[in-house]
Length: 157
Image (cartoon, rainbow, N blue to C red):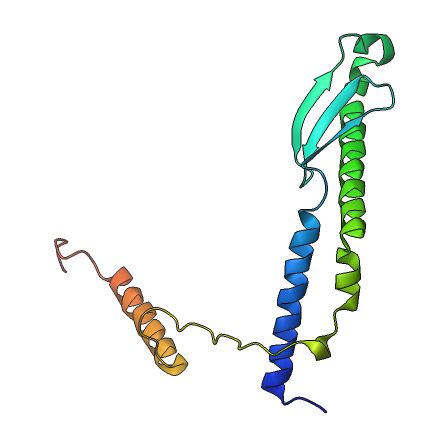
């Protein structure tokens, strides 16, 4: 059976809300923080669940393994490795929790249509577009004539 348009949009809205909630749950899965190192083990960084950098630690003996110009790339490699570990942790948690199966089993036809809130009216009075255009043109014209008027204190000839 095909739904009427409001019911179809209600099902789509319910599906989107359910999927959004599951995706938030997936994003919150996994470790709070992850650590990564560069390939020389001179740079260690920690990132949070979103991948934001929390800390950088450079070993005391970094100069034995890295040239000064290589510190920046080493930090970037460590951040990349930490973000990969964070993603792997989240993926493992999602797989273990059965969340992936929930997401895959979603079917829009099984959704109970939700009521979609109508848009809130604009604040303040509204006017028809034609009236708005007229008012704008009048304001432009009045400014144009005021711009060419001499100041009232200027002598007239």
